[in-house]
Amino acid sequence: MSKIIAVANQKGGVGKTTTALNLAAALAASYYETLLIDFDPQGNSTSGFGIRKNNLKASIYNALIDNVPLEEIVIPTGVELCSIAPSGLDLVGAEVELVNVPERASKLKEALAKYKKVYDFIIIDCPPALGLLTENAFTAANSIIIPIQCEYYALEGLGQLLKFVEMIKMTFNPHLAIEGVLLTMYDSRVNLSSQVQNQIKKYFGEKVYKTIIPRTIRLAEAPGFGQPIITYDKRSTGAEAYINLSKEVIAKEKEHRRLNLPELAEEKHT
Image 1 (tube, rainbow, N blue to C red):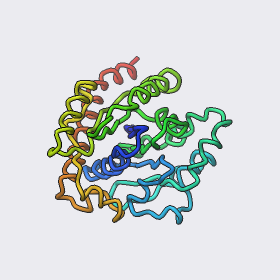
Image 2 (cartoon, rainbow, N blue to C red):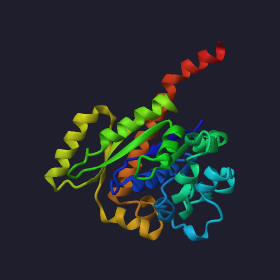
Image 3 (tube, helix red, strand yellow):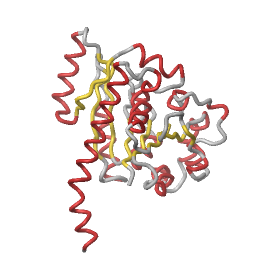
Image 4 (spheres, rainbow, N blue to C red):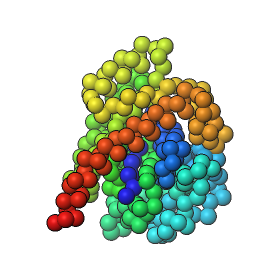
């Protein structure tokens, strides 16, 4: 079964799309069949893989609104074992169109249901807002990765995000969990970065990944060339960081499955 991870933070400019795109590519590079859902109307994950949004025949919008099957939407990214359900400009209007739809919070979950055995990981790049699209992403996901930039006001608005998570758990998805908190845009030359790191570790404890994403020019350049960092510059510190993050995500999932296998076996036996 797929592990579905939403990458979310309602603040913009925290490295959310950079993380979703590069984590998906790094997981695929470790031989895990991975699907990236570009669920942000800005479509930066789509363009970050060099895909022209104006040329799309179908997008994730069509899965939500028209019930188009994912196999008619998903396209290759150029990274082996990594595919993407792209986002087009029409996703902007999806929230308005979904308002009066029955079970509107479960539309993405329904779209993904028959593909859970196709992919090892499904990564959802959420929009920078706590609206109906993010509600759909959290309802479909097993867990959430929260990127937090190492800058002033890093924790600003996180209380609102965590309350939103609790609301989704109470109403639509009781098993939703925080997968981890990822420090991004870290600059070791600036004292503020280490101060923010300590603050976030104090707040989230063991949920903070050991991997820290540095602020680098190569990471910033890669989307302009339509590539993830592992193909744009595989020897860069940014590529190394996202490979290490993927290893942490894989190790955590293996441990989770190992711990839950006895329970699953017992359920089948009964």
